[in-house]
Amino acid sequence: RDVMDVVAKCGELRTIPIPTPERMPHIQAVAQDGIELCIRAEIVCQLHNITNLVRGVSEAVLIARTGTAIVEEVGATATHTNVLADLDGMADRILAQRLDEDTPFRIAVLRIVEAKVGRDIGAMHRDGLI
Image 1 (cartoon, rainbow, N blue to C red):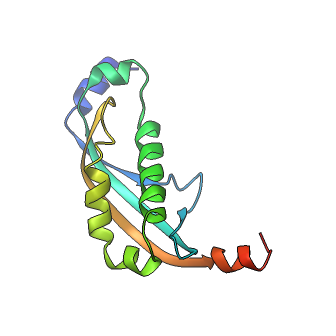
Image 2 (cartoon, rainbow, N blue to C red):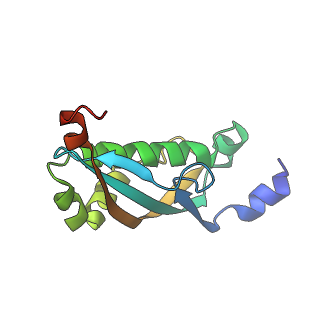
């Protein structure tokens, strides 16, 4: 890595899409009522700890942790409508998990950019379709 470039970027805010659009269009998560939600989010963060960056901890860690936290949060919620009614609360609860710990970044903001209803996974399962 170019050390001067890294030092220059330290403190700059950058926006990272969750999930990475090239890899998948959205995160698929299922609430306890069996309804799938398709979610896109973004985190605004800044490079904070150059030592962790030098060790090879990249933004991919932050993307994976955030995606996992979204799936867990939706899965822990009784209904998809509860999730949709409290997207800001979900983002706050995920932020409180300190997903940026031991990474070179500090998350300033987590935004749920899009959350739409997907398939009825519960019904598909009951009907033997999956």
